Every structure is written in C-alpha cells, then in structure tokens.
Amino acid sequence: MSPAKKIIKHQEKGYIPRALALDILDEVVRKNVSPDDRLEFYLKKENYRSLPKEDIALCKSIVMITLRRWGHIEQILYNYLKKSVRSHSPRIHLIMMTAICQLIFMQSPPYAVVNLAIIQTKNDKKSYKLKNLVNAVLRRVSDDIEEYNDDQFDNVELIPKWMLERWKNYYTSDEINQIASSLVNIPPLDITLKKIDEKIAEDLGGECIVPGNIRFKKYGFIPDIKYYHDGKWWVQDIAASMPVRIIQNEINNKNIVDLCAAPGGKTANLIDAGAKVTAIESNIDRISLLKTNLKRLNFEADIIHADGTKWSTKLKYDGVLIDAPCSSTGVMRRNPDILRRKNHNLDYLTNLQHKLLINGIKLLKKGGFLLYCTCSLEKEEGEFQIDRILDERDDIELRKIQKKDFVLFQEFIHPNGYLRILPNTIGDGGNDGFFISILQKK
Image (tube, rainbow, N blue to C red):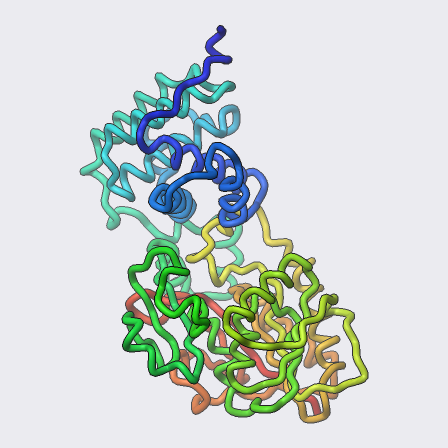
C-alpha cells in the first residue's frame, strides 16, 4: 500500500477532537461558514457522532481560540518558517496553527500536542510528506514556550488590515484598541431573566449586571444551567438586551411587529415587556428555531414566514422592531470567524437594511415608533442608514434616546440621540458592540 493510501489508526487519546477542530476550521476559512453550523454538521457524521461532551468542549476551544488569536499565532509560526505553506498545503498550515494555539494559548501538554499534530499530518493524503517540517517547527515552538506571553502581542494586529483601515476613518486609536481588546478573551455567558422570575437571580448564582441580567464567568453545557428547561431565562448579551430595554415601559398591550425575528432574543424581550408581537422571519429554518425558543420560554407570538422588506398588511402598528441583518462586526468577540472573512458585502447588507426601514415605516401608525438596531460597528449600517432615511423622508423624525430609560452605556448616547455601544465598555467580561436608534412617525 502506498504511503498516500496508508490509514493511520486513531486510537491516540485526544486525536478525534483535534481532527474535528481541523475539519471545522478548514471549512470556516475556505467557505466563510459558521463554526457552530459546521460543528452541528460534523457531529452527525459517523467519525464524530459519539464524541463525549468534554471532547466537544476541547474541539470548540481549539477552534475558537485559533480564530480569536489567528494574527498572533501566524506571527509565532512565521518565526520558525522561512516560507509559508498556506498556499500549497492549507491543511498543514492549519495543523500547525491549531498546535501553536494549544501550546501557547491553551497551555496543553507539549508532547501530546506535537505528537497528535504529526499524526494529523501523516493522515493528510496531499501533504503527509511534510511531517518532518511539522515536527521540527512544533518542537522548536514547544522549546520556546516560556518566551511567549500576552504582553508582547498587539491586539490591534488581530483585526484584518482592510477592516482596520476602514475603522481608522470613524474611530480613534483608543477606541480601536478597546475594540481589539475585546477579541482576546473568551466572553462570559449573559442571560436575560423573565420579569416575573427575577427573584431567581440569587438562586442561579453568577453576577447581576443590572436587574434582570445575569452573567456567568464559568459555565458548561448551557441546557444544564438551572431553570433552562423551565423557560425562565434566555441567552442574550447585555448590549443586545438594551434596544427593547429602552422602550420597555411604553409597549405593554401595544401591537409590535418584529421584522427580523429569529432567533428570538429581542422578540422575547418584547413579549416579556407585555407587547403583542407579530414576528416576521424570511428563513424557514430560522422560523423553526424561533418557534423552539419561544416555546421553551412559554411565550406566544403571531409568527409569519415572509420577507420583512415586502410583507404588508392593512393593520398599522404601534411599533416596529428591526434588528437588521448586518456584518456582525460588533459581536466578533463571540464569533471570531468574522475576522477571517474577506469582506462583509456591505453594499448588499446596507441595501437590505434600507428596504427594511422603508417597509417598517409603512407599517407604523402615526405617532408610532421604529426601533432600529444592528450588532455592527460599521457606520454604514448604523448612523449613515439613519441619516439617509431622515434625508429621504419628511414623515419621520429621530427620537432622542433618554438616559432615564436605562442605566448602562449612557455615555454612548450621541448628541443626535442614537446610541453607539462599543465592545468591552463594561468591566469584568465586556460586552458586544451595538447601534440603536428610534424613529418616530409624524
């Protein structure tokens, strides 16, 4: 049997989760797909179907920390390589990247990391001949582990150059450093409690950020957390809970349409505040997710499968929520795969957002409000969208967000009245980035 056809036995402890991590990263980098989606896909495959929770957790850690620290890991790798192997052997490049991640940023046992990386290389039919190179590089890295520490890395270097050049037009160097600092650490888990169940906060443990929002620094499998199956809370970053929090005192018994409802976090915020919600979602798979999430919470909404840019009805609503599809650059600390994208297709996204705004305004009563938000740091998806719609329309105006309506992030209210939340604003775990604004129909 030729070397290329040779099959290596996978009995070595720790091999399978590392092989899964490599498969996931390979597709994330090549296809711009989500790590969570790929994990779900591969866990249905025979090779990985019976993987225990601890191995899945190890796999996820390798994937996410490699993506999070990509720029730093490549710096380390190129200290030991005269020439990159990425163009002709992309999987070998990834094998070394994930191994360096484990050695430097996960403090995994060097012998096991290097040994398993060599086995992965031998199993690669295209590049198995590079096993000696992989061995040499990783053994040198493992010998030099003590030379590397967090202080010597510039977090701004984790931001792709094309993205950084854009941000320099809008943000100060201090703000960019703040954004970059959010990329390094694995974020905590934030949850939103139902109002009627706020008394369980102490029972859940964790840190109360504001009444109704709990943060867990350490957590395991989310459905194992107390009261999950009782539907007493849902996962939601503290910044993502802000849009509805701002208007929650005015929507009890009001008819609100959520034009981009899935997966349902803000839909749940609306229902919990007493609103009668019509939830619009264009993606049939995401509708299934929305229904599942609302059912667990024992929340009801009128769920409609439709395109939010075109859906119409004779009814007029008290309010419209548009949590618009966007580049998601505000949530890169939770989704570091965004850092590997070549571009964000902003032209498509901003056109879609504008269409949603136009249709949302059509659905409003006179005097009704439109709550527009994105988890994006791009001004084109926030401030510029609002400026454009205000220039085009004389039947709406910008309603100023008031400090009295919420506690956190007050310093980010712009003089014009909208809210631009930067990542890592609050201490002890940080937060996602968000843009929030309110339009009023005259």
